[in-house]
Image (cartoon, rainbow, N blue to C red; front, side):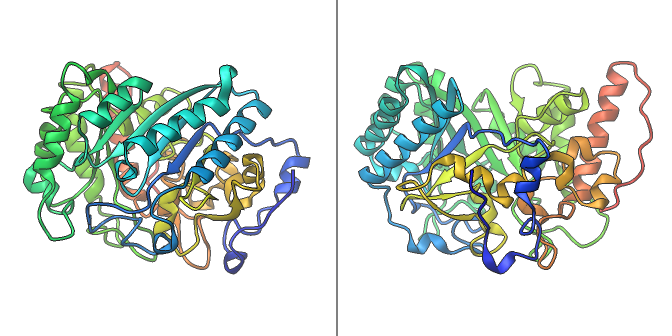
Length: 413
């Protein structure tokens, strides 16, 4: 396994100087990639003003082909099958993503699915999902997804007023009513089994309980609330450089409403993952915990990248200089930037290690830790918010189970 460097201009920032060879000699072994995100289309039919793809630091989308070609799809499928067999993976997950993936068209998505299934063969199980804004979700797409068992996740930011605050069309019109139309089709009896859940980006100006209850009306099996992307150089909206906890308070309001009502009916991913971690289990999410991140992204031109949320940090942050036409996915695992997300506590800052919540928080989402000069070895810009949320959930569970909550020291980020 060769050892490759990362973005050359960032060599002095963590994890640019991480010695992967020493890690390997010391007995560490990378976790094979199980989640493959395919950017089947690089453009979008909405113009959400908070989008990390189009509105933040990395503007590489402008150089990408609009649609992933059949040749790139074939190379990608071959590499996925190769990686799965080399690492004896009996099942993997493939996410059809964008931009807006439905812009690729029904037949192109069919070709993508069938090509990946063929490359996997009978010995590799492939689970497919698609993350869409829902505007184009009609029976043609739903019939395709039903044929191949593709799980459908839809992005919705609450009620109409809250959703249309950011998720608008390029001409300024809101998208909520079109999204609801797509959701209603998805919720019909023929397709209901495909409904994967709802994804919502937090907006502090939206009432948290109203937001939650408006999503609940769609009866999703799962929902997740995403902290808006930002970092120490470019803080997220409403996140002042002090010890206040606006995002933690927003999420706590939903947690209390959910925990006392629908916790056994609908899963809220962030809360469920924190609860798992508090009980000593591993996390299945990169947002919290210290589980190895084993994800690769393939751009429309065939470039292999890391998780695309890194694009919010700086130009080229997600890049690897690898391509599916020549590089196996195993090569990705030797990159310092990828190894840093698989070595657990060894990747955390001293501030994080001194905090009682670090095993649960895990330092927070990796892109939210970035600060120019030091790179990604910092606490999350949402440090105080996460600490308050985790402490609150711990205390609620402690009371519910008749346990005595242990007082923890304050976060030091």
